[in-house]
Length: 165
Image 1 (tube, helix red, strand yellow):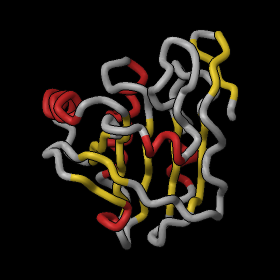
Image 2 (cartoon, rainbow, N blue to C red; image 1 turned 90 degrees about the vertical axis):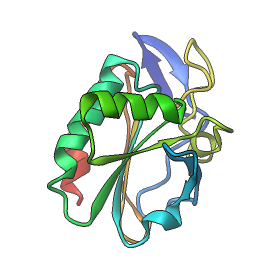
Image 3 (cartoon, rainbow, N blue to C red; image 1 turned 120 degrees about the vertical axis):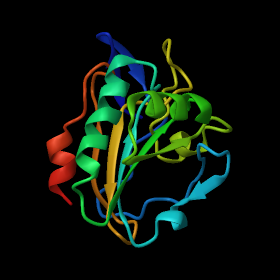
Image 4 (cartoon, one colour; image 1 turned 30 degrees about the vertical axis):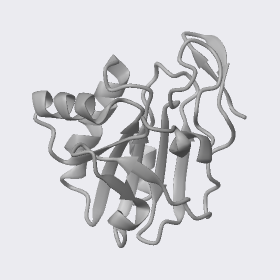
């Protein structure tokens, strides 16, 4: 269980992030068209998983915009933006912003992705949502980098995440 903060107040997550060097667990997440995507949909690609509480908050929106801008220049890499937002909200946001270089995935149905990766917030006002996390994996699903952002309102370290690619 990680201890993080929201507005300086302590909150906790459901566990620990996957260890660097481990294999990312398979997942089933909902795409904008309501179809289900799994890790195998991205086989052979490096992945940047940009995970956050909700696209409807300023910091989360900034992270999606920032990774969208970086994604077009990344070779053989896909950026996955993952939250518990409904796929309709994710699609609306990216459409309104003109963001086309990221893939939105939703864990709205069960929250299983957040639980499996130890990043679900378990207490405080955002309980049940995902904490702000970056996970980078190689073409084989091996974890290269993780970051659990200590204060939910802060942005992740984009440079550190992209440097491992």
